[in-house]
Length: 333
Image 1 (cartoon, rainbow, N blue to C red):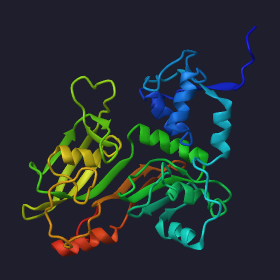
Image 2: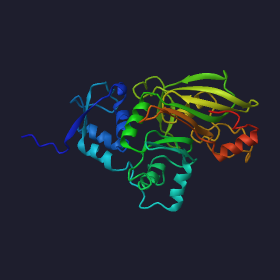
Image 3: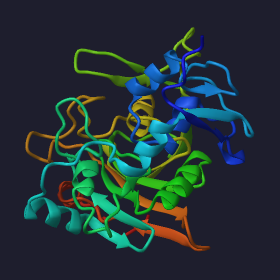
Image 4: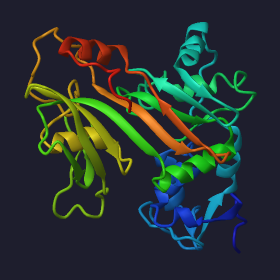
């Protein structure tokens, strides 16, 4: 006798603009609350299926296919935050979020994320943007704002957050189709030649003594390599010692800009994951990552307009620019 299904599910159809996504990426976009480990368990036990067949997380989805998603996951995504919010936010925490806001309307809120604040929780990370926002549902009309993309803990700048589920879904699709134009500013060691170009190097995650880092893939690693491409341009130089860079990622891989500049031979100043030889005297500049999400241009998720937001440089990069005789206000993004 067949046992009754304990987690009833409703198949969901893959949209045209989701064609070609890896299944795990599809779930990250649709259900950002679902952790990687939980997703793997659901796949192993057959609770998630693609066109009624068991698949692995790296399967590529096609438009028109149907994904069986447990109803419990669908319901949790409507009600529960991706990480449990803190029991109560202090006035300091609430004020910090308010200071970060550089744009807001009925559908989105844009933050200028500071250095050192994680976007999401993880092992040993209790204070993060997602948790702070989850604790401020009263501020956002009783709804929990939803992250639609990420920044590294030490990367500063534009962070886009959706205020409604529909806006989150629409923005997720926009990012998945690479319709968002992102510009980062960075300070790197040395001066890249040529001064404009494209880095196109597939990346893999590797373990090391200081934790995971991203490196260029090697022969035989095609099954886990992630295609990654970045346009770069030198804005100004500090003799041959360093360069102020504009970086425009085409893809959106973890640590992509940091890894690509390291592969190019010009690591980002202050990067403890991809460190370089010291090029400045002790105390000359702050020993902090000099990478800033400067500008984001993206179609509005609910209106026939465009969101075009530029985030001011963080204080540690402004101090460095002043020390090196660079003018951060001379150029737009």
